[in-house]
Length: 121
Image: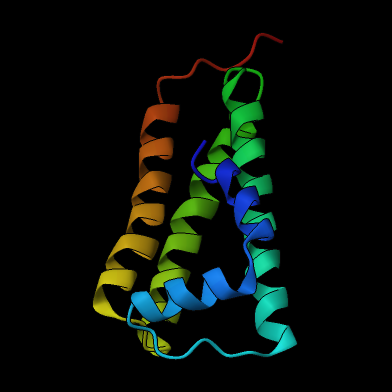
């Protein structure tokens, strides 16, 4: 549900984004169209991801192959985001609360998926 709430960030005023950016210690918020575009696009992508997870979670037996795929993707995405954060370089607190939890979420999905029976043929 948390990522589904990312849709709200699409509507954030640019000044709020700038204030939050500076409050997080990330420096001055770049005032460029591509930054606004990327922030809102990523919020939309996270929102759709959250809705997708909610739909799949309603019937994990039926969507068992997708659950496996989601687990693998979250694990890979978490590792990739961690590498991006380290390369950027993002602040340590940011790196610790972004990529590793996504990767651990993927591991948890894959672990819990083992107890989901295969759908009846």
